[in-house]
Amino acid sequence: MVRRTCILVLGHPITFLGDLPMHQFVIERDLPGAGALSPAELQGISQKSCAVLRDLGPEIRWQQSYVTADKLYCVYLAPDEHLIREHARRGGFPADRIVRVTGVIGPETAGAD
Amino acid sequence: MRNLPIDSGPARRYWSLLPLSLAFGTCLAGGQEPPNTPVVPDLPDELVTFVIERDIPGAGKWSAQELRDVSRKSRDALEALGPEIQWVQSYVADDKVYCIYRAPSEQLIALHAAKAGFPANRISQVHSVINLETAE
Image (tube, rainbow over all chains, first blue to last red; front, side, top):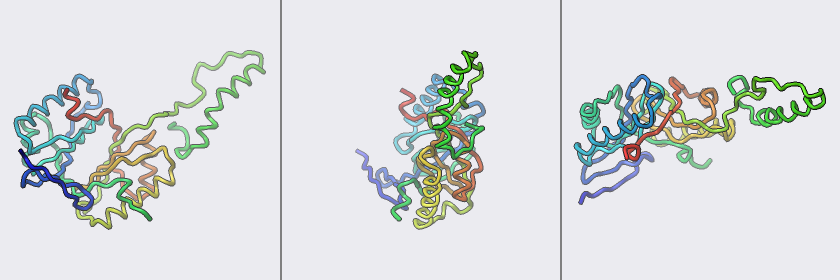
């Protein structure tokens, strides 16, 4: 049984998987024509991603991806950038930019006046 | 929508009355053929999701106070623009902030950025959101 805990740092949840801190990453994947992908093609990509994730184990988790005309913005949880790159390599996905998220803000982080 | 002023909540309501007034005018004029081209501009009623890339060197080092100040700036600009534009959330990372917003048009996203004093280096409409469930 893997122990999962979650703490807030700068209002941003950092998840721990066992003793391993999980960081959130944004990955920019340049993919011309992405916005024209059919639902079946998107499902195929998702299945490929999930298959690689299963092989890599529970340390890396896919949260969601935003598909735009020529680019995918993916949000993942992982202990480090290396595992993100390995997932991209095995899946045959581009990973043009990988950045670690240091804060998540939204209307609620504005607080009260 | 693109030919109209962006901050046009009341204007939208007036436009919506246009077909009625034209129909009434047509009756008075003796049953002229209505024009084939739509009289009312294509006003999107549904909000679209956008990803906005904001290049902000040093954003990844913002303190909790700075994150709150930025959030307030965004919120104040949103309040000035009305309910048509909504902020979902933003990921602060390294020298960029990736923002998820919902709005009827890209112009409104750009206007919000200008009002708040934020850069908007790339604005992209989201065609779909995929996740684990998409694979099922």
